[in-house]
Amino acid sequence: MAVPKYRTSRSKVRMRRSHQAMASPTTSECPHCHEIKLPHRMCLHCGYYNGMEIVDVKKKSAD
Image (cartoon, rainbow, N blue to C red):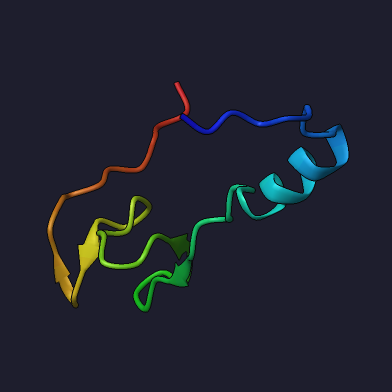
């Protein structure tokens, strides 16, 4: 069984892990209300997806 002869240095470990960073999610603009949303999902602000109202989103009332 292969066993490393020397300990891998901190520099080598960090160079290897440099490509494992989290990527920011892709966003798109809602064509109905122009808010930022995730692609292929309904807009959380207006409730529209693919030109159709999926969910009736009520405005919050200031009580």
